[in-house]
Image (cartoon, rainbow, N blue to C red):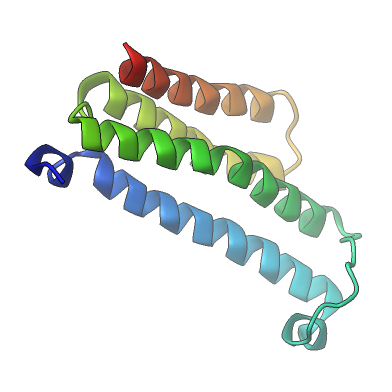
Length: 136
């Protein structure tokens, strides 16, 4: 690996993105455990139960939504780091994605429409910026 990739400013953000993933998992699992109980959480979960409470359902959908774009973020961030293009606009795009995904969580859990969709579009724009830096 090149020295530039090791020093890329994108790499700490990749680490923080893992923290964001863990936040999603913990929110979803704690909401589901509150609804279905500790025995269900500790068990094999052979039955695929659908959350009935709005909060548990929103937490599950927000987590699934995050995981839809997370591989793209990781791929772009790591490709940009390895290529030595991890600064400038690439970093702007990565931070745009990260902050928008962070803001998205409370908006989704609170059930706020439209603004949540706008924030999702901002996150997608961040990925778009990263993509453009990578390919051009």
